[in-house]
Length: 386
Image (cartoon, rainbow, N blue to C red; front, side, top):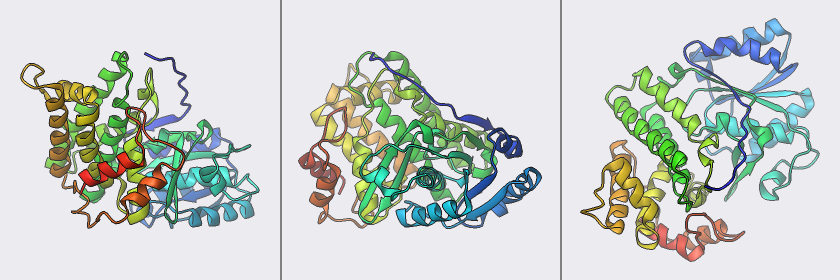
């Protein structure tokens, strides 16, 4: 078990009517000029907009808003929001929605106090001198961005991340009822995203981190159980509550304790979604199905361990490599049960851009920590994904 430092100051208000705490939270954070970021009219349908309007009116907060966020959020919208925030002298950003709205809000929060182009933080990796506070009302269960220190943005063919503990939201309001009206596709790609975050953290080369191993295995079992319940009854609020909480648990960095997570599969998927604008959760289903096939040959031990502990693969009857392949089969079976595609061919993607994407992914060197991948290795994985 390696040494670690854990920090996550996000205040979580979870459960039925949790949105009613918004006024208190805005007051605690001393908000005077608020920028609201969301996507479409769903916040009015869910009654969230009414709650926000009442809170800012009672507190005398000046409100400006933008509801134009789209999946795989783009830098152009962020630049416009930064300009809007500067003009209105915004001092706090509130995101309502899922990962796209939250990551947009985080980018705006570092961009407003900055004199240069906000893309500098993503492209050049510079550290902001000042960051505005961010709050979240989560309406999906997927990215876990509501309690994470990361944001992902796209700019043309580039999809890059930025990490800084100061962009961890000050608060996250999570009412599972808000997720019950999601289309089934958005629900299942969210589940796939949660699973992907758990897998990235499980695939570590650290052999002595039993506590975190068992925590992740337990989280995976809870995810599988409640995914089945949602597939049977999409309105099951208890199952949706479990999934929404798991989304946060999977990505608030607590499960990094004592180990170094992989993240190679995410780098591959980011290239796919930047190039083809596919949905991240479905892209992760494709990549992990292929990545586990590749690792079954190259480095099977962690895959075999997970196959035994979660899926019951017998270490007496099956070799390490066979158990690793069984894990790949189980992942494929689960993602397909969710109704997701598990190959690039099914997504209408051929091999013409494989080398281009592999070179982009490795422009700063190999990616992933379990078994670092160079461009040639990424091409091999993409071929396995066809």
